[in-house]
Length: 142
Image (cartoon, rainbow, N blue to C red; front, side, top):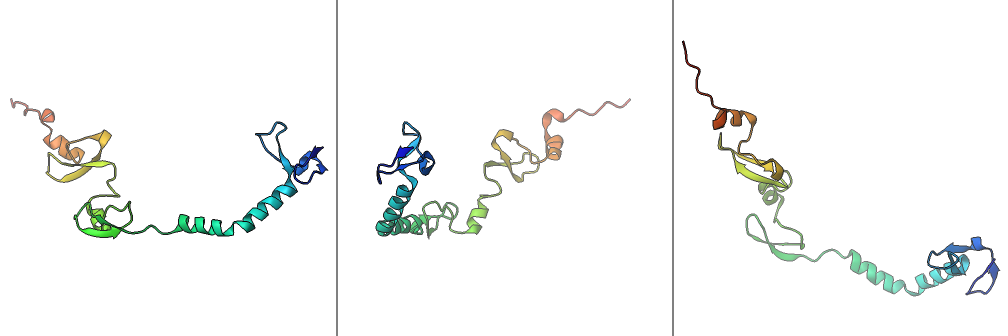
């Protein structure tokens, strides 16, 4: 049995919420008093809650930004980098994220590779056709 500090009634321990910070591991007021206190706070502070929710979920205000691809000025949120999907795709934003651009030494095409997989050729065929250390002198004919 434990006494509630709010209503001063002796109640079973099962009628108290758990609280690890207390010595006995239970709250000082019973569950019924806790619910009443919570409901009162909810009713009395409805204006503050509405204001906080309005601020939290208010859409981001647009800013004037400069597109990283075409350098034009556009209105967008803070994290926007490109003025349109077209500009974003021209930079290889989604498909080639985390990759670097290089020009194939074999065919001259532009290709992408990951940072840990640096290479100078776009395909194995370009590599085997153009790598100098793979070129063998022709065998002498007898």
